[in-house]
Length: 378
Image (cartoon, rainbow, N blue to C red):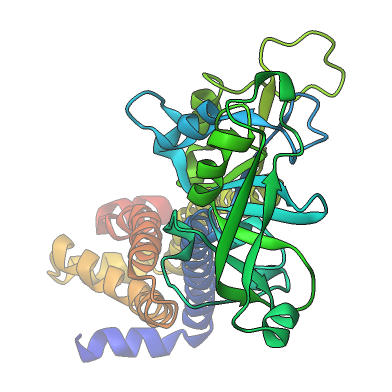
């Protein structure tokens, strides 16, 4: 940059400070709003990725999600991708089946620790396993309470098992079975409930139930951005919850608990939409500010520009000199705040729009010929 340009900048410090402040303000607004929008966009993606949307099979009224006594086809609808669309949207399927041991002791077959509060650390429970494959096993093994295990660590659980919801008219077996289960771990706290691997429970069903039965099904959505597709796939098997249903085409419904996710995503998307209209407003103001400041700062310089033209300064050289004078400080402001906010693209756009607005007014002022200026003065 030539010393002449610096002299012209320093000759009118007030106007240059105004140009600097306006350029800095617009650069800050553009960079901040763009950076905020980008952060909100990332936050939306993170929210979708991190949320655990629980989907629960219920009765058609949506009031009961346990003791449903569903056929094994409901399990297949959640796990068998060869025949159903729903499994493509499912992760961590959870199945539960209830039995009774010796008429009074609850026995629950579970496919995952999340199926029961007593086993799930996230809900205050906890489990210590002696076999890491406990939940995948179909062996005669079980979990008992920590209290029961401490009292008799080598005890084998035995007795007669039955299905409290079996229809005795259609039993495939005797309706009861003498069992003996090896303790393969314990859950935190006290209680007499015995937990089995789900497949072990299914083996029991062949004798004590009306075929393979399951009392509760739930799962997590695999992709939270495809919940509508999940609902559509689930409609092949499950109905829609209707608290006032009198006649239904399906016995069970699927409830997708996405309320918290929707609340969070809606708030984020409102912020993104707000940025989507604020950023163009800032850019429009930038263009207008460049024109206005350029017009104000060059309006009183027409005579000087005409004089420079009269002594042989080429129009192209004059334009370059005037634009350099007008844009140096706004350029510095945009560069600085673009680096501060790590938003180079909005900073560049801000500068280019400011420069575009300024160019219109500068060309108009610097293009005045000496003869035209004399005629205007006469």
